[in-house]
Amino acid sequence: MGNIGVFIAHSLAGIPNPPPLTLLFKGHEQLRRWKEVEGTLKLTTHGMTEARKGFDVEIQRRRDVSSGEQTSFESLASRAAPKVGGSPNPMFGQGSSSENTASSHNVSTKTQASTLNDDNAQSQNTGLDKPITSGIYHAHRDSCVIKSEHELQEQPSDVQSTDCGTLPNEHQQLDDVYEESPADEHNEVIYHLIVATKAPRTAKAVQSWAHRLVPESTILFLQNGMGVIDEVNEQVFPNPKDRPQYMVGVNSHGLKARGMFDIFHVGEGTIALGIMPQLITPGSEMVQSLSQAPASSLYLLRTMTRTPVFVAVGLPPTDLFQQQLEKLAVNAIINPLTAIFDCKNGGIIYSFNITRVMRLLLAEIALVIRSLPELQNVPNVKMRFDTLRLERLVVSIAELTSNNDSSMLQDTRAARQTEIDYINGYIIRRGEALGLHCVLNYMLMHMVKAKGTLLSRDERDILPFSGITK
Image 1 (cartoon, rainbow, N blue to C red):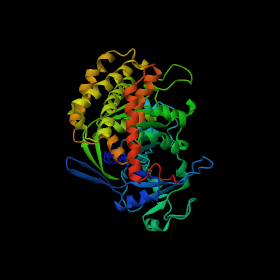
Image 2 (spheres, rainbow, N blue to C red; image 1 turned 60 degrees about the vertical axis):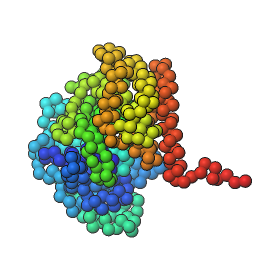
Image 3 (cartoon, helix red, strand yellow; image 1 turned 135 degrees about the vertical axis):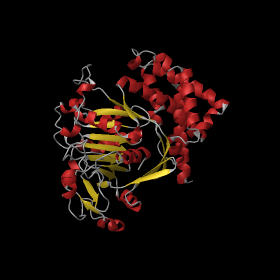
Image 4 (cartoon, rainbow, N blue to C red; image 1 turned 45 degrees about the vertical axis):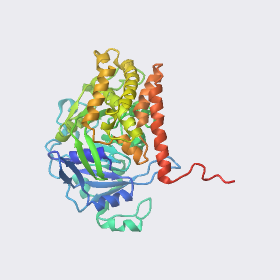
């Protein structure tokens, strides 16, 4: 699982009376590795490691590429580990159930609408008398779903053959630990989905579960960079009437992987959350107020803010947008420069030559941000996004995390796709729309891509002209 996915799932499992959680895996390889760690997520903070069990798992079946249709999922629930949150949850209400989903690190949760215990939420007529599913997705490897107790009791006792065929021989030993769940669960509505995949894979991850999302659902996006929602709208929900409610989170916690299901919490931070306003009617310019947000959004916001480790806070959309832009400006400097120069975060602030490049880049970024139409009526924008202030912000964060490797550096070293298109690429796209040519950011973006390509070739030991013969 990815760092944020493990962090989210581990932390949600630690709150008082947590809902049952189910991890969603892409294939049997992840299931095998999950069994190797005995179904445990580990989080190390200040030298102390806390392990948590009790997660169920669900495996995604193959997708029918020829027809473009998503087949059902092979659900597997652990009989060995104790269930998390098996007792009645006061927050959810007596006799309520919960379900959490995480794909590539996804987590989902089910509960009855009457258990939201929120006056505004209960007044919404959103069909939440049905179970609510909340999901958490990360890095296209696995996921997490919450099952209700009666659903777990109704599951058959042995694993059967699926549409994909019988499990391969090397996975037969898993049969005595996991059992198949009813087929009806494959199409259950997901009312809460927290997407923590890398930005380039977010639209694809959401597409895999779009058939289980409805307009009353809420998707919380937790990625570096910006522009993901526009991509999801274009590729997954082109019809505004079919779109779920969106929430956006800005995470400042420092996380470092020690294994697929084992991470270090290297820097304490916060998670700023905001419910994105939607158009009242498609094509209109009027947006709904937050009091009109679906009950699923209010429930998810309450659940995130009641988790102490997150230090989460809800913000109005405009304030959250400015926080996103501040983090974007910092990431647009630290991430690509550390990736290109292959250095830790602190390395870029102790070189005079790099600081000159940093200042030129920030001048270009600040000009684009201050020119955005969304911020034209917001007070103190020019002061908040002044070049010198942004430079002080970058230097302070780089110094605070001086011994850390940026996520882009880690991706580049591992020959993985980076999020550069959603960081500097976002600045370039918004600048072009405003008639501003961001040549420095354009150059930096392609330098990062070029380095990733070169390292990928070296990793695979491929010569560019090896296939040419005389």
